Length: 246
Image 1 (cartoon, one colour):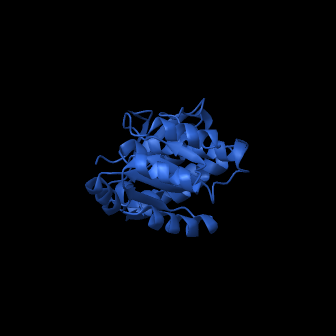
Image 2 (cartoon, rainbow, N blue to C red; image 1 turned 90 degrees about the horizontal axis):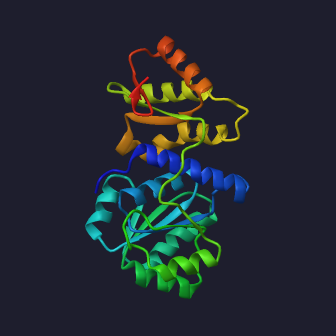
């Protein structure tokens, strides 16, 4: 299973936080993402949701794929029975804590069982696999109020993607860079609290897969302030802007 793209995780996270501000009073604690399939795109949605505070249930029949996801830290639990998955989710949803559960099962049968029981997600994602989600299930969940995630998350207007990778002493340097980035953000933008949360929280969920890397979308003014401080305080770190070296 290829790792999800870090920038895709970031932009999907920003999409979740926009929905949180518009629909859920700014918080996704206690909200559930239902995911059909667990390919790289699906893993990106689950990771982004966890960073934003949501719990998730991913259903895939590929046991080897899910075991690999567990080993790489892309999910918290892999189970084989829907009852077990729902028990884990119920506890964490009640506590408004993020948790990612993968169920090894046929999605069509599992969704039918969930619909019959009245289990209702707040978000639904079909991942990146064509035909992975039964159309009838999608229609039922969305008719009941689930938000269908788009296949691609549009980036924030007027921003550039800044990415950096640290080759030596990443455990110390990545937080230092994150602090500089956070201090460069415009406090008047309504997405700044979410971007600051990303800088603080994403490494906790992505550490094993992306321990030496981080990224953030910034405006032109924020980018200039960030690069100026980086040159003065931590010179020599390779930083790219929209894929090109800044």
